[in-house]
Length: 179
Image 1 (cartoon, rainbow, N blue to C red):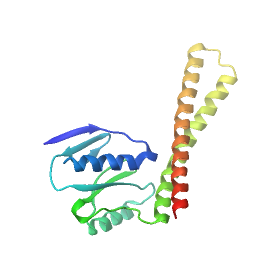
Image 2: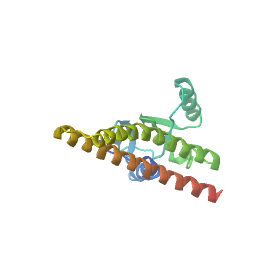
Image 3: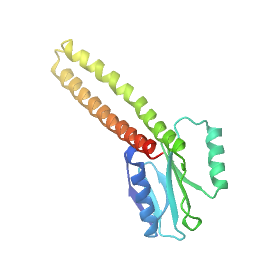
Image 4: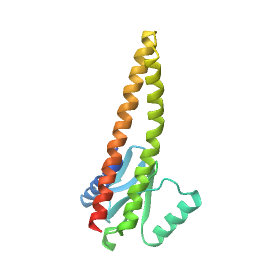
């Protein structure tokens, strides 16, 4: 039997997404594939442990080498959504972590933060363009309303990105304190 779920998660909450996938696996629902926002689960045995990875700037050949290396250790790639890749390993083989040492965990979180920081720039630029148009005195009311709406959208988007970047920094600081 199969079931599909629509899911989206915040980058700083990736660990909660892993926990959710692992709880579903404990209930007998194994992740079969990821396609956009749609997750497909099957009620099959054996149970798996799931992990997410974020790779922003790997060439296709290096990415393939990475997947091959993981496959040699019994880790299976389930699917990919954007820069996020979903992996699983048989639970009977014991728990696994893609990043087991402090340095690699920090690099992982930094890659996510860096990507979000890059996303921040374009809306910020567009926000300043629309603000300057508003200040310069748009006289056409529909254009003014559109410019204000765009400013609000870009501001909210960037505000959400800043919150994610701060949460990831807090996670990095916690790892450094434990180390």
